[in-house]
Length: 165
Image 1 (cartoon, rainbow, N blue to C red):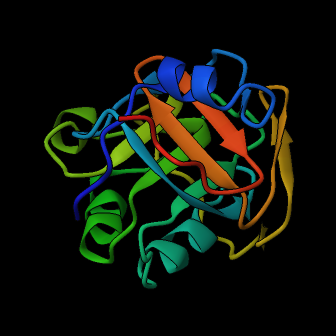
Image 2 (cartoon, one colour):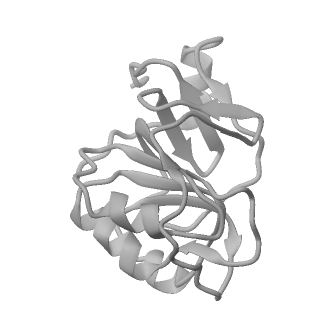
């Protein structure tokens, strides 16, 4: 997948008032630092069942935004699910929660931002919601809005932006 090149501060400068920034809570873990795409959402708490289902579906360049409630007690994404996301064409994953297998994930062609690494896996109870607006880091992440992320942070726009050259 070829992701467009951009620098988030330049994107903000070119689209002042259209794109808004998330609070700086996240670290980058994937092999791609800059990623963007339409938002798809999962809301879950310490249960990654819906994430596992979703990353096995065609991503078509979208970004999966996971509201894990900010839990620091287990990981919601590991190397197997990240590999499935790569295989199925997701451009990135943003997790308001933790991930694991960071060394393996760092080599994958996927943008990932999360709160922190955690070695414990989540439970699997098939609980949660998908394709609902979620709110964390001072922003609402609505399905079909656009997410732009790089090492500078995360921004959300209600529409796809023209990337500065």
